Structure formats: structure tokens, C-alpha cells
Length: 371
Image (tube, rainbow, N blue to C red; front, side, top):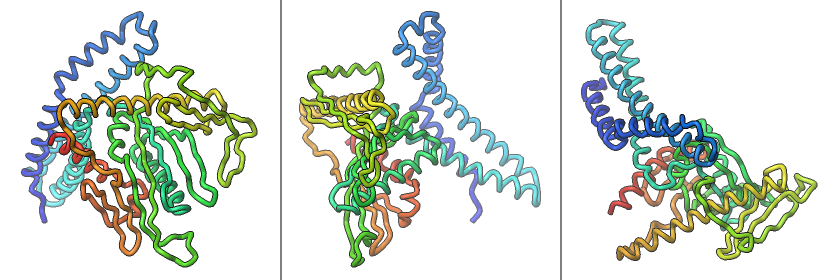
């Protein structure tokens, strides 16, 4: 069926206008001018932490403005291309229309991505993300499922060219992972991945069961924002217990002949963070403290949000922890239990194709927060 390019151009323009109204390019330009002035101050780097905040904010603002302006220009270019196609005939017109159709799809995809970005307005949404995956009920299948989820998220990051840094890996005895913690470095990584937090469920014929029985297993995903030096989460030394131990690899084998792994317990809350993937005890301690501070930051935000809801008389329960099912037998389907978004190709999902789930989750969260 032939594409109605005129209707599609109108749709792109309407979507772009909605996005532009939210992002407010004029306000972005004013913010960039203000930040540029601060960034050019001769004493900027006298305070490295404050300088980092200014230069990072400037970079993000410039990137956001560039994305918006380029999409507007691309829509104009597409419209011009279609006008040229209308003046041509035969094969030349067909070739231009084919190119226009490809551009139309790419612009639509980029607009959808930018539209989702406009919904990420939380205090920490712009931050890098720290993701922890823990195996749950289901024995060796759950540990294997945790490893499958690690691959899914790292493959998703690779698709977007987002750097990933593994901080800590705890291997299960037979196969898979007890837990793993990793960072995803990208603007809005936390806001984007935060909707992945919760309990994930896998149903399949267990490859570890010699009778070929169907097994249900679970894994928990936690997503927190990466702490920044300006967050000022003070942790007195008297509030923590630090244990050092020898790092271990798959099957319990030692991967380091020194006691370089670090476990920090936050005594007031009971939070425990372990790190072993860095090269030295000092580096592992620093990484563990950073993740502990991030978790305390989230805990503080949750307490503040709960108090606000209490003061407002809002006692609605939040959405349940069990948020997604991956079914490989007796049928093939991955379904989000909050949004009802589903796909029939689990292989592509485990290969990192989860943008549809993330986008649906962000829209769902926004809709529920507005109710």
C-alpha cells in the first residue's frame, strides 16, 4: 500500500511540535549561554566538583538542543525531498520516494526516542545507572536466568553504544550467577532503566533437569542512580563495618591471591555491598562506598516520597514487584505484567531488544503518576 507522505509529514510535525513545547529550545539556549559563561570563568577549576557539575550540565544541554534542532531540520529536508520527487517522473521519482520512505522511518524512530526522553524528568533520571541482578527462587535455573539477564542488558547497552562497567560478580556453584552489579554510562541511563527494576520470571524446560521438566525461576533487578561527588551523602565510619576477603571466580576458584575483595555493611540500615572486580582493595572499597551511597540516596528519596504521599493523603499501593514473564515453554512470549506490552520472540529480547518494554514502562509510569 502506497504511503500517504503528506499525512505522515503532518504527523511528524505534530509530534515534533509537542516535543519542542516540552524541551523549549529557547530556554535551552538561554541555559547554554549561562552555563557557557560559568564554564569560561578563570577560577572555574578552583573547585573541581563544582566545575564538573557545570561542564556536565553544559554538555547535556548542548546535546539536547542539538537533537531537537537536527530533528526539525530533518523533517524540513524530508519535505523538500518529497517536493523534488513530485517534480520527477519514472524511476528517478521512485528512487527518491524509496529514500524518503527510509528517512521517514528513521525520523519516526528518533522522534519516538526523543519523546520518551521528555518523560524522564525525575531528579536523578539524567544520571548514569547502577544495576544489580540477583538470582531468586529456582536454584541453578535462577542463577542461569540471572546470567541471561546480564547478557540482555549488556547487549541492549551495546546496541546504543553505552559503556558498561562490571563492578562485582558472585558466581553460583554449578552455573550462572548469584548476583552481579554493573554501571551503565549514558545520559538518562538511570531514568531509562529504572522501569526495569523488580522481579523477573522465567518459565522453560530446564536444561539442568535430566527429566526435562518445566521449571519456573526468578531473578530480581535493582536499578539506582550513580552517586555524584556533589550529592553529599555522609556516612560516618562508625556506621559501617568493612570486611576484606579473597575474590573468587566461577566454581569458587580464586581470581586473586590477595584479600582484595571488600564487603561493606551499613549498620543502621543493614545494607550490604560487596566489590571484587577492581584490581586493589582500595579500588574495591571506593566502588563499594559509591554504590552504598547511591542506595542510601534512593532510600532517602523513597522515604521523602512516602512522607509526601502520607501528607497528601495518598495511600495507593505502588505497582507489584513481579513485573515481567519470559515464557519459553509451552509457548514463546515475553510479557510485561504492568503495561501488558508483549512480544512473541524471546530470543530477540534476550539479545537486547528491550526498547519496546522500556518505552512502554516509562509511559505507563508517567500515566500512573499523573492519576
